[in-house]
Image (cartoon, rainbow, N blue to C red; front, side, top):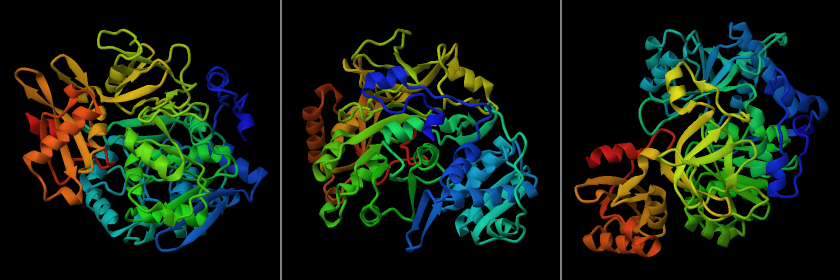
Length: 550
């Protein structure tokens, strides 16, 4: 399959990869037809999706299965009047119907809006009106259904409500019955062009209302790099990415690139995360590669890994937030596997990563990839020198990366504010070492300026996380008359330390940071809390902490 889209697939070195990697984008590319149906044609029994839930149910889908079921779903959606350009929101948790529905919607040229089941009534109303959503396909969960029903009166654009069960409210369509009764699917003559919007995410945002990030139909091809050259997958891989289908991480790690490569995607459908259950899945099903955010690995390394046979696991990748070096070292000590970090945004595909051709540096995002012309821009508009902090920007004058977002939907002003003059501003700050490795500092708004120093929250948080008392933390700046700002650490304590809150513990933590990183970075203010404010995607809302600091 890759031969259709790449002139060269295997590379001898990182330099060879950077210089000679090129994606060939065909006209009117459609993931449903060109990838799913093509695999079904040339290798119908090829394994595509191994779905397992926390009740012991499992189902292995082949590509022929996915083609058949997505054709039925496409016919069902068409019968409801859903077609090219229509906005359809999917709230499906980790149910296997997500893969059927999104493939079907691609086939008819509709726009898919994946969304989390954590959305409240207010969140749903905002999304429906901002994007003029025509249909919602949801899991028949009591809480999810309740929020959607409460939002209904304030969401006039929604014409169809569809449930995959078990609850199907009165007046809703039954997705499963719709597939059973659907007539034979007739492929549209012109389902899409490359420039049409195929996928749209509402970013959870650490400030303000979510933005609508629109991607075109070529976006899946940008994830060839994600799956083949970061996850290091092949046709024999059984790959697990831990992510709910409401987040961009799902299509990054368990759909587009993985199926282009021909890997079998493992989906563990659970209601409550338990580290031992994930380890049991790897053990029982002989999973070969695994990707999860650092938080998951922080939980896994606290378990007794000797109880599980993890010998099938050959490769592990990590993304979603910056990786603390201590987590890298402990996972490597326990498993012998190095965590290969990657960085990207909802607006992009993978931009910086630790590829198989390079050795990881614990705490570094890795090196730039072949699709993105990356630079670091200082506050005064210069290209940053090695060792100097700067905003990560992407030049597009010579090449527009496959996978870079088209726009913030219906907000040209916001789009121009970050993407103009062939330069996309990510809003993320990093520095680059002499070997070309990038090190994450934080969002521009999160950088602390104290006594002339620029201090990134992540480097202080990494130091804090190596203290046994600290389970989770967030570092922000507190206004100070003399220094401008001082560093504040907001900390969630480990269970063994919750009754030991004291000035002595604060000093112990402060001294630990002084020893672990540069002394000027230590937190002069320390606050203990039961939990940190977070977005619905789990990202820490430092803006809320900063507002409380004023």
